[in-house]
Length: 247
Ligand SMILES: C[S@@+](CC[C@H](N)C(=O)[O-])C[C@H]1O[C@@H](n2cnc3c(N)ncnc32)[C@H](O)[C@@H]1O
Image (cartoon, rainbow, N blue to C red):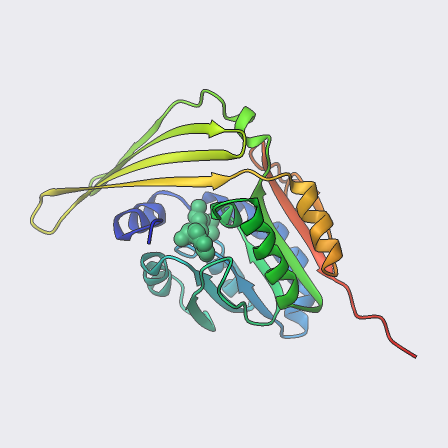
């Protein structure tokens, strides 16, 4: 598993979560009709549950999925009341049918290239039942210029420290080198290094693809009018069309 091994899963859980909190009000508003009909919300890349906990608190039936077993283990502990946790690796694993698909933290940008992102969105469209709601965030091409020259960041806590450096080797790639130090039971510090490589896509291409697959979607700067996501991170929201009645 290249992303979010146990040390980083813990650091992510204890050191972040604000993005899920910020996205939750807008996503919950879009999910209201889904909740009213008792529909299933499929979350992709749930991580340690930063958005999941809001979905559950709002009374939704949630199937929370992620590629990282370590993230799923943290989320299982942290978020009671989830209908099911599943390991699901995009873009190849089968998506269960759902009345909504949600995802925050640019999960689909973790795929290796634009073709893989396309495959994942086609799978999402196929999983959505008629009237189903889509709400995901994604890295658009402008993310690169928006973050040019971004200085490394560091966070230090009693039991762990994390250092993150950024680079963008080409216009379609944005990468983070993440080094964690976590204090073990014996008191020794254990180091781990992960390189997170994200693909930057042209978001309007995704909207066109979704339209071809029966999902009317749009791009916005946030999940509601009051939210402004970081420059280059866009919200893609939409609804799966009802099939045309024949005869
Ligand atoms: C930046 S984290 C966001 C986690 C969580 N949604 C949040 O907002 O805190 C990205 C998540 O995507 C997951 N991920 C990365 N590649 C994936 C893939 N191919 N399929 C499914 N999940 C993936 C990671 O394991 C991680 O939990």
